[in-house]
Image (cartoon, rainbow, N blue to C red; front, top):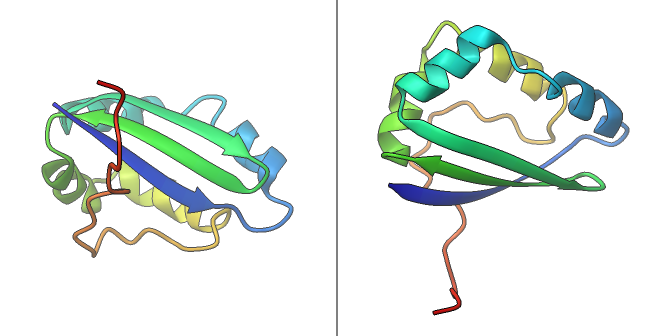
Length: 103
């Protein structure tokens, strides 16, 4: 199991809309995320800054499985309207590097 931290930023004025859209994600996206190995995904928002914690079997595999998934494509298009930088799933990112953990 991997724990991946991510950071994204909202476009100015999109905070309330982002919160509203995330109040309930589409059922088919929930199924797709879980089928891709996601066990949990939490998002914290501070103003326009978003901090994600993803608990997933294999982050790289999840990204590949979701890149062209019919449930993810419309979701990413919707998120592109709200985020400063669109996630097109073309990169090989590995999230924010872990610096320290309390032993």
